Length: 190
Image (cartoon, rainbow, N blue to C red):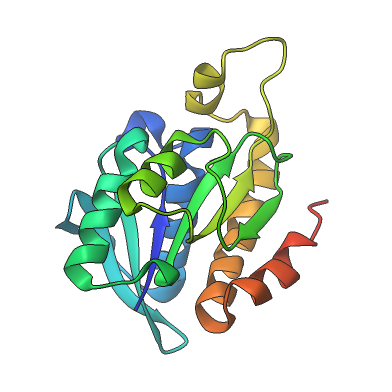
């Protein structure tokens, strides 16, 4: 079984923020697969299903972003899922709005949710899919930027990147990280 974890913060006040794009991608996959994300397990909302016959567990940690790793580790241990079967989906302020980038491993790049997963798992050797949300302008504090609702002007490109990210996750499940990187990292958002 593959584990696809969307990073974000629980609660309606965070739903439309840049920091919750990981949640939105996992919700999109759940819709496409007919999976309900209603079961509570290991401090997360989870739903089990399949992508073209390959079993997946879709996960939305409810621990808030900075403690996401707690939930991920608990699920991996309980279900005996190896780190190679884990994909974490999150926002990235260092990528331009709409960009989608898959990596097989690597640093957290300043992302507290990714750092929490790395710390909890004791390794950075898991796949991650980053979705670009752009950088703050005019000296806006980073925390404000990622936790404010996205402006209407960004909605179209954000929806396109969510759809592409969901497809990249499908590619990872069916063909692996290298195929996903080859197919999706080179794709440009118009």
